[in-house]
Image (cartoon, rainbow, N blue to C red; front, side, top):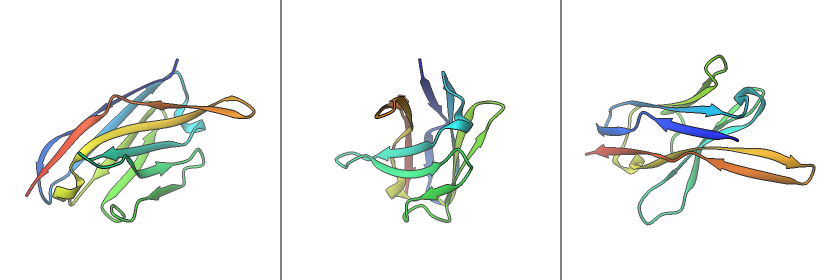
Length: 120
């Protein structure tokens, strides 16, 4: 069974930094694409950053240059370093991965989410 557990959220002033962690069990993260999503009140969940098995990363335009996704294979943990935070970054942040079940089907796994609040 796959479990993803996020931590590291909190309240921070604009311009500050936070580092989110996503500890995974049931999978070896270096063999899967891992993503961070966020959902602000009244808005749809959006993809923030992703890292694939080969190590390449991608980011939403709104966070490029400010956020960095990384992983520690020894700890089986994915991180999201968030710098220069803005009030519009306020959201619940979720860790996500997709696991192949059969040759034609996949299953999505989500963590419970961690709240990030940026005050102006």
